[in-house]
Amino acid sequence: MVESTNEKKNITSKINLPIEIIRPKIQTIPFIFTSPHSGTNYTNEFIKASALGALYLRKSEDSFIDELFDHAPKLGAPLLRAVYPRAYIDLNREAYELDPTMFEDTLPDFVITASPRISAGLGTIPKIVSSGYEIYNTKLKFKDAKERINRYYFPYHTALKNLISNTKDKFSRCFLIDCHSMPSKGNKILNSQNNTSADIVIGNQYGKSCSNQLTDFIQNYFENEGLIVYRNDPYAGGFTTRHYGVPKCKVHAIQIEINRALYMNESLFTRSTGFKKLKTIISNLINNLTKEIFNS
Image (cartoon, rainbow, N blue to C red; front, side):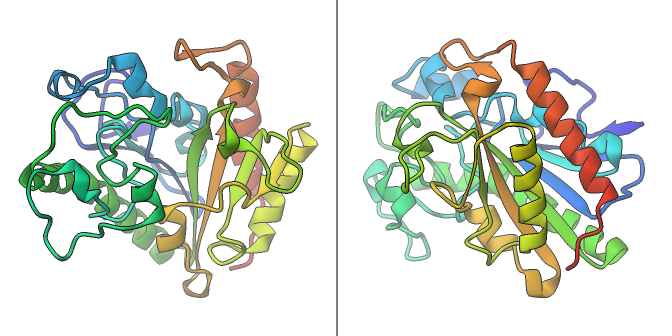
């Protein structure tokens, strides 16, 4: 059986909770799965404040990723997912990683105002969607951004910290799988060595956030399924991987990026004929992970 903080299973439902944790009745494995960019609650207020229509706002969304990994609770691991979309707030960033040009007032000193993410327009409150279009018609007020961060960012990371702590208490170790998708076209999916596209990119911060044993296992599994897999190129992992992956403390964090062309129509935001096959592959991966003993 699966317990959920949200009884509605439709991922497009307009629920008021900032996050959702889908829990197994009993956690039986030291794994946690997270999906920080699959939220689909595009409120009317947000859409009205944006210069973009709903379809353009969805270009930053990791559509259906939470659904692809929803077998995890059935096999004994919790799944933490965002409810609100990445275009509204990016949970895979520092808490206050903000572009000062987006705001009408001066930002406090504690705010991070310069980083590669900010330069790309992809801070905690994003300036653009992944296709490069600017999100807002007018400048924002910091008090509104702070309220948004307090309401949605901190509950997500508080929940994640609690899941990690509880997992460590029960199993003396924790393995965090951070789940993402990537567009099928553009330089962000190309390997820098051979300029070819990947089906899967695994990020472990070049070995700093996760053991090579788990990384090798996941890479070998996907390759045995006939998929093209790259490691740390072009994605080595985001804030979640960097911040929570501390192998010396027996917490391992790894990021999995999946090429959207494998499972969805990227222009229509619908599942493709490949969705069922990929879901089976991922479900079998999770099943295999439950049987493997990883050193920590």
